[in-house]
Picture 1 (cartoon, rainbow, N blue to C red):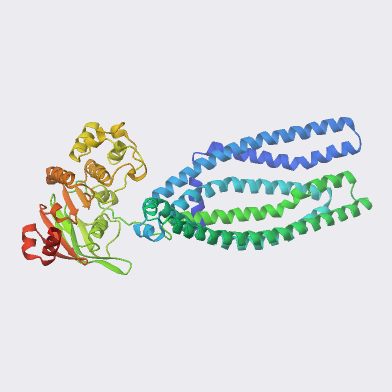
Picture 2: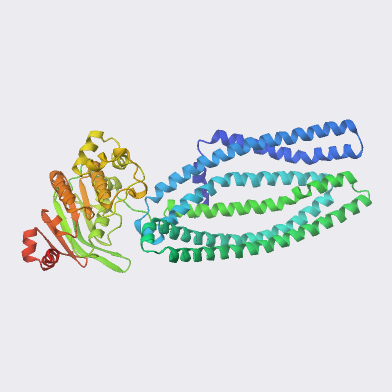
Length: 572
């Protein structure tokens, strides 16, 4: 990974925050300056107290109070801009990564699950946005500690050398822990992502979990996974605690040696008691110099980890992106042709040397047993997956050469279980065509037998349907999806068991409605019920991933053994 290139790109997300960053930097400098001045002022105050110089006590106490009050105000302003910058940048990163996620190949989601990617998009942008303030904090603390250390060196070089040597020991102990932390953090992130993906699947399948009475089994399973994560995290914390124990005990030994050194210096008139008291008060700040270097390095490593995890998505470093061509079609006719197409999911070959041609504005039925490869054909037409052999042409141009807009804007698919968004019915319809008029929506709702249902609702078409249209029956969801597809006005419409949840009367009504518009569209219909495709212009018969028939119903029923078998089975 070219880190320098990615750092530049991350800084691009900070565009528009110039004013905030300027204020942030100025206030950070002031905080460092005040932190560096504080020991000197405190030393003067203590000297005045020990020498009972009342006037000096009042003056330096007032200066100390003003310094700390100023620091509090500056810290407030600093934190305000820090939070604003962090929030704005996180939103920009999220927007960019979310956009890029939609360009990933479907096989990535098949393999990892949606929860895996949502976890990264939810968490990592805040780590990257927050690193700005974390590095600032480490940097200002580093400078403050350095300033105090320099002050101590000026006052007493012997104590300065002692603090540098003692801090170096803690630094090397923490460095060892930091190397271990990097590996452990990577593994912990992987475990959490897997758990998030599985738990997300659990929530999405909650309805089936309830009806299958799988609650106890799945809760035990997820609890077991969570325990594994907790045990691993506990083992990390245990190692950390041992390191902290060593560092803490070392600190107490250093404190003791510091006092012994101070006693020696005072006894030999190399240092005054009041000056030593000030140095003792601020030795902790000076000792943090090495600790802050460790903190800076840890933040840097955490930043790199998040950067890598996000750019695996953004740049397709680990998860491949969809590839489109650069050709475009201004006006699609609707011709589709499969040329010796083969495809497999993993090791299982789903389509084998499939060839057929669909003419513009032709209505084609597709029939075959479950698992024969019918839905796979639609996935390939939508370019959700790339063909492994052969090619698919749209208006004589291979899909691989066309841009995304030419494919996705001109093809609409309605599935057996269409996704209905958690918004109103009207918004679900307008989402594909924001400029559509209310009159056109009303016309299409009548066409899809939705008008009677809508009139029964208190809020009518403005009723919010819940997550995935939870308040709608399967049949109503299919009707909303069909209406949405017609409003999108794509030249090619693919119906994948799109009326399977409808009663016979409604199904007949919608098929009759589709007959009215089919002269203007190329329509492909996958159906298990042959009665729904009998009146299609032609019918494709698929068996074991191969096209074994492609003709009109009356010819297939006479000449095609597979079709005849399916037809007789339905009649029976």
